[in-house]
Amino acid sequence: MRLLKTGAFVRAAQSARIAVSRAPVRAALAQSRWSSSQTAAAAAAETQHPFPDQSVEISREVDPTKTAPESKDQQEQERFEKKSKELNHGKRLVHENLSGVNILGKPYTFDNTTNVSDSILRLVGRNLYSTPDHPIAITRALVESCFPKPTYNHFTVADPVVTTHENFDVLGFPKDHPGRSRTDTYYINSTHLLRTHTSAHQHAAFQSLVNDEATGFTICADVYRRDSIDKSHFPVFHQMEGARVWDLPVSADSRYEAQLRRKEIIAKDVDEVPQTRIVVEDQATKFLKGSNPTQLEHDAEEVRLVVAHLKRSLEYLVDGVFEASRQMIPASQKEKMGPLQARWIEAYFPFTSPSFELEVLWNGEWLELLGCGVVQQPILNNAGLRNSIGWAWGIGIERIAMLLFGIPDIRLLWSEDKRFLQQFKQGTVTRFEPFSKYPPCYKDIAFWINSSPAAASPIGAESSSGVAAAAGGDATKASPTETQPAAFHENDIMEVVRDVAGSLVEDVQLVDEFVHPRTGRKSLCYRINYRSLERTLTNEEVNDLHNQVAAKMKSLFDIELR
Ligand code: DAH
Image (tube, rainbow, N blue to C red; front, side):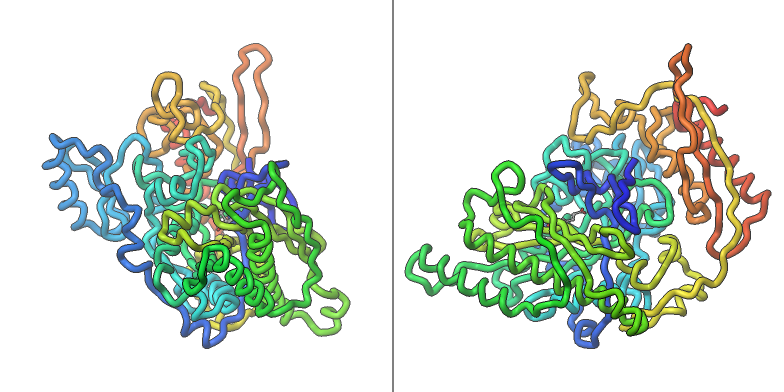
């Protein structure tokens, strides 16, 4: 499971798959967070569009519909595509030997890697980050306002389908990185998935900087992770990515000269980032080989300057965001609270080195806020920025939005209830007023597991039988979308519950687990907490939902209900 407690919000261990830390696994920023007060200038500066065409398409080397481009299947494939394009978003199509789905107007065929479910596809395209009065959009604007134009371009990317290349390969994820696992990631097919982080667009965004006036960017988008169900985790959430680069000045006589000049420029830029009132402890000042190294091709002094700029820029962001939330606190109480405390710690990400995380002391607990670091040089080189050096960061929006607006349950952010939506106004941070708390209704589901679940393996990893391994060992089975019973993985029950009951479930918890002393069989019991945010659920309704969950579990997985 994924919850390592370190703050008012739990760290998601699942995020460790993206942000695997070196020493003790420092789970990453899954649903990282921030806040904002939107300025008119920031709103005007926002660019509501994907990257320029060339950039967006750059890593789309594979046609989404052709998972196995066998020429004999081509006609069938073309007919499938034609039919699928006529469908609305989220509609599935079974045509001749192919089955698939239309996602935002594009057809995709399924294969035995597919594990995306209808309940997830229904959430694609809500674009909360561009719904002006929504807390997610207000938070995004606050973050963007800390990284102003013309230095930074502000991007959003509406289509969440990316290639495995964009999400993992181009960022240097090893083939066996757990982040690639089908138990954690929603695959459309073996080449396409729902992005698990905004870093999937880094490559395209860096490309957009070539010959551009801007030297940095932010990206905001919805991201998708198979995950457990509780008040601070939802399978779709929002992230922002930021980056900044410095090119070598062209006018210099030699590369050495150019680098000297560039160092002066970065040093000046560091001084220009406004100082904050935050009290910062820096536990990551040494970039040591083995733990958090400088990259071989980088000049140590220059890295120090880039890191100084990165840290200052993010402290400025934290200050802006948390000040926005502290504005609601009465002055007398604020005085007692003293200045905001933050700390830098070492981290590990495949796409940066050295890498860091920033934590903030909030309500007496250290809250992990963001990950960042010096961009791996091959990423810049591949994007046409061979002569540049730069930094990048990534944060989750929900955590900050929930904190800023006092939103107690992440599901509220997806609510279409006017009592929620009408409380917020573009450009302002206000406290959420709970409209009601409806009663919960617990139901347990207990079952024997027939085949023992193996550790989740990434899809790139081959099992000894030559079949790509997934939860339970056989990638062709471990999906709720398929008909063969599959070995059970914890994220599977979350998926089934979500499919049946959607946001009528507040959380799902493992309450009992034991191994039969004689047979060695394992029994699990999960407690499902049914509760609507909008009304009281009837007993019959909950019973019906629960029966559906049980039936689906029984038909999909190799389990025996108790
Ligand atoms: N993509 C990371 C995640 O989802 C967050 C992140 C960390 C982004 C470090 C970055 C970075 O750009 O430099 O956990």
